[in-house]
Length: 163
Image (cartoon, rainbow, N blue to C red; front, top):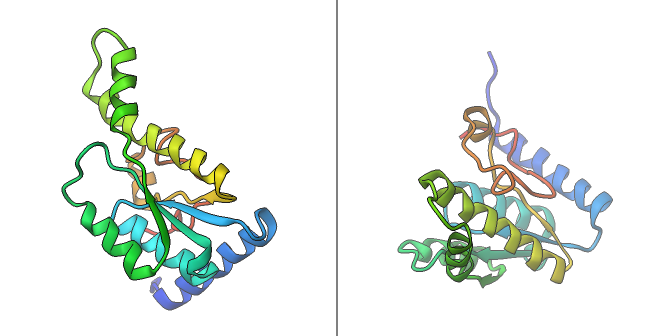
């Protein structure tokens, strides 16, 4: 029976991240969307371990008021990484207004991660970065991601980890 070894998994993941950056962005920064949840927290910590805190930039992307944004700030402060906040509310509202007519709830839900990913890539391009995907294997198995939204990234450190 398979026995998960977290120390070994972390070390292999850290080595993989270092190798990715050596081949695909030597000297680049890792850009990660920070929600304060488990996935962005784990990815951010792995990035800091692999690249050092000076090469990891967290981007907080609330849609208007986010009641638990303090968790995201706790994470970036705990890790000591550079960070910025980009509020997507105006972009989100403008996108919905441009869709004219009936907009389904699923559309309203999925537009948010797509806007967030657009903003992450825009920020990344201006800050010598590579965007981290924060999806995990459990989410991929059940289809809990948004195409062209949170399922996107230049590299995916926890894609082989289950929750």
